Length: 179
Length: 391
Image 1 (cartoon, one colour):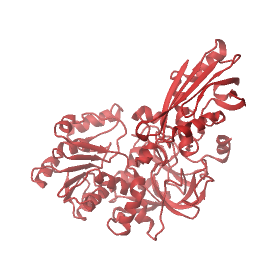
Image 2 (cartoon, helix red, strand yellow):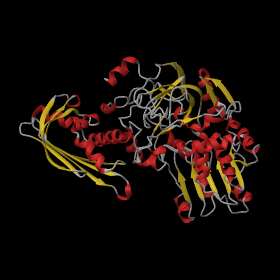
Image 3 (tube, chains in turn orange, yellow):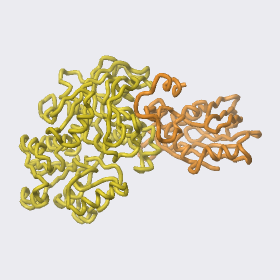
């Protein structure tokens, strides 16, 4: 399964590249990622959780890294859901900032795990990635994912309508969404 | 705190709800000193805007005193104690739209952008108290409100102007002004304005300030036409006058050079058969908007003129007069107001006495009487033009 999405941000390519190169920032805007941390040169450990209804962890290696242009990675042997990703940074014409083009590829396994992953991505798999990139844009342009009273969950904004009413959260609700 | 909540179509209620708190680091909490009911709130009241939910706090015109700022707010720009007017669209100031002064099209402030995008092709900005389609932000018909990206959006009021003089900088004064500005008024222009509600009145005032030779108000509510006439504008009552003929008569047969639709999706007049057609289609939601004022503005405008649309549309319309628009070289301009673009210059015009926003206020009510305010505003009862609520 291949997902693609793209967005344009006003930030210059060098800064967008520097942002993505710190892989541990990806979980701030990618809904399904719990944690990414660099382990050794060119290697990282990834942990995905809640939305899959499944804890999945894997190690990945960086396969390409060209400053201000491209970063690519793929999971190393033994991942439950073998996957790879690529992000390209292209200067937008006329000083319009940076086009960010992302491709994620998942090799869906058979059995219950494969079904759970397919169900998570739903009928429009790229919608998840579109939403991730929308949040990435919020983070790089405004500093964080914008929360409303109706959609207060930040990157976990996967609640179906109806949402929370557009009125302030109770103390308990606020603690939960900010946890 | 107390807040005016949408319950179901044609039902609002002042309820006790939790106080707002900081959710994002650049938030501020504002203690509201004045707030208002907007004509576009009536579209929500009537149930014509999808994604309203029971308990949503209404209101996108509000001002007050900052009582708390989040840790990420630039203290050089905003701090507790500041008196602010809050613009209704939430901008980020950093995306391409905001950098081009298209604040109501901000690319970052609508957490429900994925839904908005499906309806509108591209998402639009978050708006306070204006359905979940525009983000699900609690509104300002309340005692307190959470203001998002607070170091970018609110306008600080540092002079001793009264609340009533500056409150409408939040929406209706900039909206009316943008309607006139989009007309690119030149010497000798006659500007016709459909709708003599508060936004229409401010579009008229703005057209005059921007140099219109003559301003014509079109409505069917006698007190609203009188309010326009009291400012020296010509008036046409469409309930007893053929609008197109009257406009030709007033313009030496040329037609108005510029036309402003300050009515939007719930226009209530027009040829009987079309009115019935639109009402039935809107009732079954196969047409979401009744566009009669827009049709009439397009047919009335002189060739090569500009039709400027500030009345709110939400979805789809039928029988758009594309032939008149195309063959007579008309320009159609529109947009939800980019309020942040206009707040400061319009504050200057208020300070210099060029525009008096208080002239449209007919009712001042405590917040607890918001449902009554909605009732008289919707039904044009008791001479209601504009309701200001005091929390």
